[in-house]
Image 1 (tube, rainbow, N blue to C red):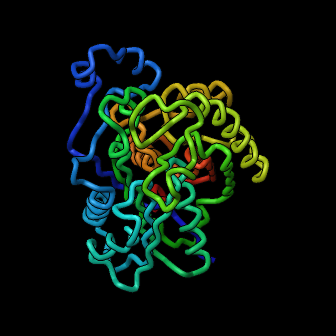
Image 2 (cartoon, helix red, strand yellow):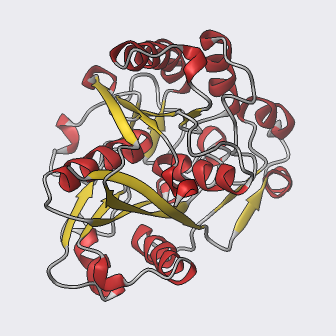
Length: 335
């Protein structure tokens, strides 16, 4: 039976960089030093006004093809995860298929899952491959949350950055991704949302959990999200370990969605995990939503952080509320 194998990953970040020093000059009353201590973020990449998620995704995919000598005609499915699509319709992944010059026999799906999206994407890819519906899947994540945020929104502008990642997921006779566990709780839909732009009339739309302090279309209740996360993620980790008859000592690295330093540091403490086993890599890019996990993997691969025999756990969590995790061995290192 064929299994999904996570191959090479490439990243594309917008050329425009917004540093905390720039924000401090623009808003002298903001305490950027304190904000940076809590978020762990020094700068973010921001898409230009006419630059969309599909633009970033296409550039990441072209880089993937070029740098890893991948024949674009071998791609038989696109999975595109974004919460900032180009249009309500048509499906953005179909537009990407055309722009990349992929075969018209290539399947294409958009899915909207934000911070848990990369793990969900791997699960979908694994299902397509195990059912023999596809062999070479282009898993794209791309976000431009900055388009939902007004300039003077101190809480969100200092956290979210834009970016895209392209990952090749291919059929293999080696099982290197397994143990998927998922969760969702729509009762928390009012913690992180953009309530306009859909078919629901404004008067019937989900209301933010608390008073909306900023004029941004995006609303986030950060404290509530932290409280939910530091409970849900350790529970998910325990469920994955138990279901696969593993213990904490069997896991080399816990690769978690890179939300903020404060949230990840609290998870380290709650899980009793050392800093080297739960890495944090967001200082120069911010929270890039669905892109944080592939960016983290790509960076740690370059630093030789594990071997092909290392068992790592991938965990995504956030908007929805939704969460998901799985186990992963990096078979790319043994190729």
